[in-house]
Image 1 (cartoon, rainbow, N blue to C red):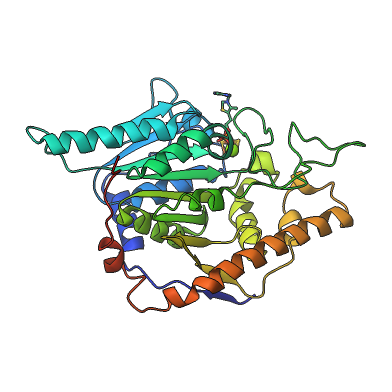
Image 2: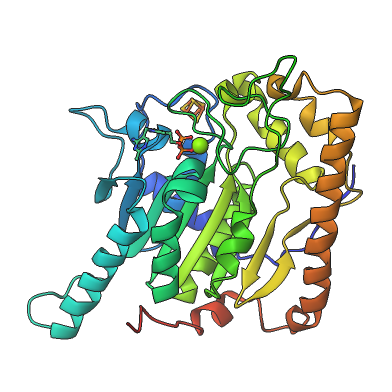
Length: 343
Ligand SMILES: Cc1ncc(C[n+]2csc(CCOP(=O)(O)OP(=O)(O)O)c2C)c(N)n1
Ligand code: SF4
Ligand SMILES: [Mg+2]
């Protein structure tokens, strides 16, 4: 299979990740996430790609539950557990307080942190969407990372707004009357991009360099930023722990999960499958799709094709903007600092 990487290299990206991990890991082992869970890959890649201090807000979900079993914690950075509904609202307050204290001067002279929210798909697509929308609209300076494992996993695999069509979950069972989730996911990345924030992107837990570059760009833009990261869950998807990387690669290679970014409203692909594979290859890797027949698979393929072509139309329309040599350099992003919320 040939592939076409559309991405210029950020030389600092991989080196920065290694340096952080060597020096003082921000997220430690010993947590209770399942073997093969993709969440730790996301958290480590995100936190290790950021220079300087970090403050983390974490909505409820597998990540929070499994990393903070009293009296232990896997977090080596300031960390707050909040409810689903208010993760982005809490971070708005923290970011605004940092800005207000800095404006006041006096004894508050600490280096301004990078503010990072981690939320699952249930907490982001569904329960916390209103507070996320409000925070993006106000323009707070923070990076929201949705680790999207496509269902409410921590409570026993219930369907969320991110669950793909046909997927078997506890609330979309398979039997005579039902054949898994009757509808596909809502396009949260597009919903977020419609807020006209400086940076939004789709990434995967297993494409480390791509994810790391996106984190650095998101942070350097200096305003509200959002990453939707496809994150494998062996328990909920039905594959063995060692297969996670291959499973997510199939999602990317089939176009079911395109890797792209939206920079100041302009769309660009960061990885182009060539040729794009049949969605069967992704469906065949997991037991949650095992019940699907040819007609159901064809309907899923139609949906993936339709969404892919819509995305490509947007990418094509914005291609000339990104053809400029200076637009995607590390320096260019640093120069675009837009600051915190004007409100
Ligand atoms: C308001 C509210 N509703 C329901 C719950 C129960 N609950 C705890 S974890 C969880 C699943 C969260 O799903 P998601 O955000 O996708 O994260 P994941 O478990 O998949 O990591 C739910 C529903 C809760 N804690 N708070
Ligand atoms: S249930 Fe899934 S998301 Fe939760 S810890 Fe296990 S593998 Fe990770
Ligand atoms: Mg989830």
